[in-house]
Length: 535
Image (cartoon, rainbow, N blue to C red):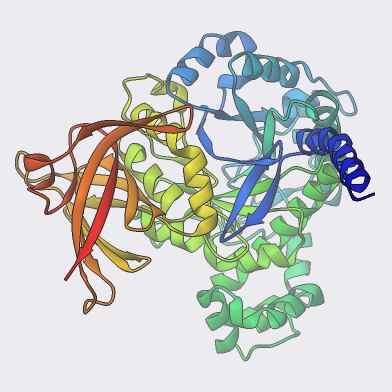
């Protein structure tokens, strides 16, 4: 009987395995918390987006895009971030044209690429130039923002008819994407709108907006801020505390009679609108959705950057407006890359940057984003302008593609670090297990290195795998009173079908006679170091 029961169990398992595999294959892309990281899951497995965003108009023409795809593949991309504009999807109200969508999907699949679509609809860079002509010309039905006493080409988020039209079009688009892509999973995520907010003034001063601003703050917002008080972004929490931590009152009463109240008011209205659009889309096809941000990197005032966009200090306001948006993403052109990454990588908000600087700067920054901040991916803007296998970003993407399965596993385990070094920030230190790693620019190959970057993973007891260039690592024990740490050996190598293939044994000048683990500043390498302990 025992043998029969075992045989039946094996039979049941064999019957279940194909259905489980099919379920994983047909499950839509989604975000999932795995260990210490939130990751993008595609066909049942974590996926690391080595991506790039096209220029705004490139993907409006399939013929224009045809020769670009091979260049993107040569650069090492696995995902292309590309606009889809409302005006081309719904040129006439209620009449949808999916020719461009289907063509881009066909081209992407032929090039073995995934896609993140940008829904450029009511707003793009604060303005409303991507809305259809039938929306633009009907300012009564689709009201505009009033800034500095003048109606401007920005659709007001107060416009109920505008929200309904945008949501209806987005839902139709998501319904079509599900019909044509739910088995292939070419489309990984959707960006809603682009860098939204009021430009030229701190808020919308139209009649309907003024009336709303002078009305009580919606109870759902004040209740959310009260319930999450201790975890709010510090600047928002301090603003609430300074104004008496009120749970009711007008916008000026709750948030103070300053431009910050104007900005929070606009954040709420954009958030409420876009959360509603996203919810309609998710009802048709539930894949990850995000909103991107034009960062206030120069201590500007609201209106000099889009007032109401999800800057770090108002992300909590956006969250209070709904749950359709899965994450808030920085468009990271700042020289202070590390600080802005930390602003956005916070509890419940994994890091992805749909727009970033590419070339040499991006080639370095991607190591930090994926290693230190458990990034979902990285995406320089205008990628087709620099697409070449000789581009520095291509070198980084080639290295990271080999390491992607390990990076994802170590993101979840929390035993991975990434870093970017320069003359202003020439060293970093972190502890992995019972070892302290001291990472610094490598100045001894042929003079002082101008920059370095890399990623390090703990792959076993006293064993680490690293990649990058221009840095050196020394080791000390933790606690310092423990056995001393020495370098047993350093091995240069590569991965072939996921298996480590050892190359040179790096000794003598290459590891400073056993003193340091070194990465040449002239070319990226993948290396393994094994330590030993002694008294």
